[in-house]
Length: 143
Image (cartoon, rainbow, N blue to C red; front, side):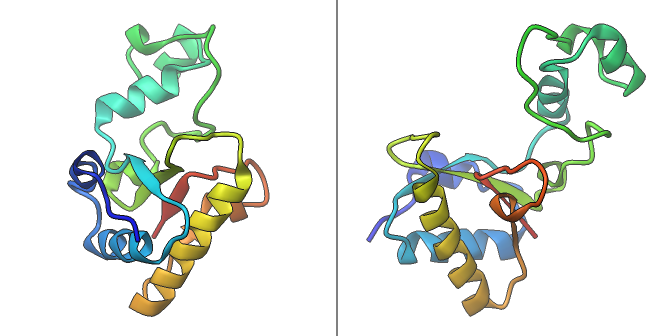
């Protein structure tokens, strides 16, 4: 059985209590250890994320200060509104296999099974980014 690290527990600050309960139950159920890479996102972090892969003009059009524009980086968000992420309200969380392995999708699926089981047990409705029909977001879970 695994347990959340202190760093992961700190990243639960500001996350919806129902989602926190699901994550804490999932770490007990999973056969794949995981870490929380992001919970509630600050407005500044939304700007940082939106600026990746976008020009000053694109950022300015969405109310993101020009200093966050980083057009030479890969995009990390495809939201039209940089502040619409459920991370901004504590309704989303990102979980990654530990040790970190971004390329083994089987590990992300194993985490998703545990999260879905925990959500079912606790009667909390969640959505997993790996189930999305368009661009997949395997670390992402939201309520």
